[in-house]
Length: 265
Image (cartoon, rainbow, N blue to C red; front, side, top):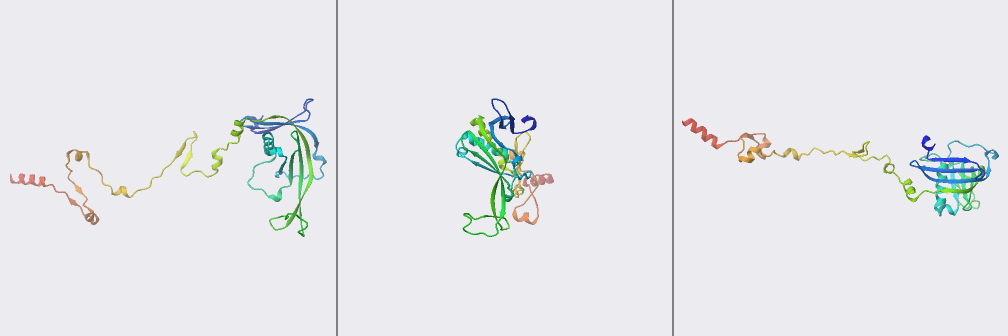
């Protein structure tokens, strides 16, 4: 079912004579079971017993975990991570602190008992502030008004009993916490670099135009390199003549002598 609907978490409720009022909560990673906890319901207070039933859809609750085992034992640290993923809701960038209306309090009283208490957060404006009334300075709104926080019991409230547990191996736990490099880089893509559909990294190099290449003269031809004789033609004169734009004709002395011999004959 998880692979069919592309879900990474599941909650299954069942009831039997051997395990009455049973709830199973689990997570998946890369299509495989990561961890799973089995909880039995010992006490349940429904939502109908609450006086104020107004709940805003999409509001973010405050998650509070009480118990030394949540920070000591790996088993209960995994349970804390599982409950946080289950109740945190969608991931958002910012949250309005005064808009937090409910508190989910998880109390681990012993290694087998887990209690869930939901409380409503009420904010009331304080007109006069006296130094003897408050031990700590009161919370202030963005517009500078002092407010007082009070908690009111809400529902549902549940007492769980921890039953069977399925913990991941150390290698699987490390792979589940591995962050892809694309997520670390974020939206910052390297300049002139990209990855094609096959996963190959392709880079592009831009070579600028160099002025030194224009001053280079072409080398001698193969005939000149073999015979040592230059081909007659026009050549550029050196700095002074080249700046004036004049050219000179290369004179071959041997060619003049040959022309004289032909004219005498």
